[in-house]
Length: 166
Image (cartoon, rainbow, N blue to C red; front, side, top):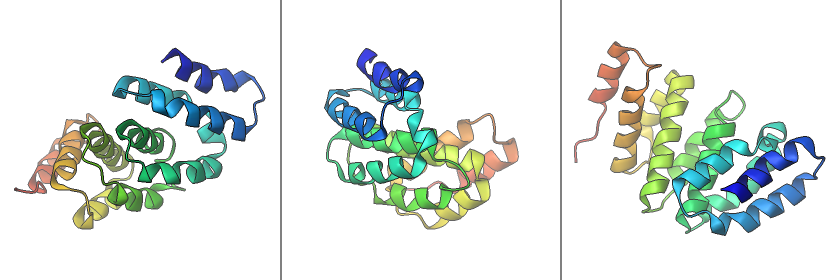
């Protein structure tokens, strides 16, 4: 975790070229072996917020990874840095493309979808109506939406009605 913090926070004050930061991330990814290190690392990578398009391009191949925590890293990066007006409609196809049996990948996608709902409820509800998420991830996303304090009781009731019965 310390190595991840050094990569993420260490470049805030130093003028480090973006390709070098990305190289360090690439070298660090195989060392991520749990959700805590993954999620803590993602939030420290402030460079993703300053050069979103370059990071977006960097993340795209990671969505094809077979490594559970590499894939989780890519999804959590979207959650932390890309749920905004410029990227919201680009996120949904990425969520649909994530196909991995790992619990921590599915939970990251569910969490990301729920945060999209909190910030962009209309757009995300339209996405949920036709998404390609597997039943577990879809239902977890709904659960996480209903657990949010940012969603009112009436909306939570409606969201519960969207649950897929398997």
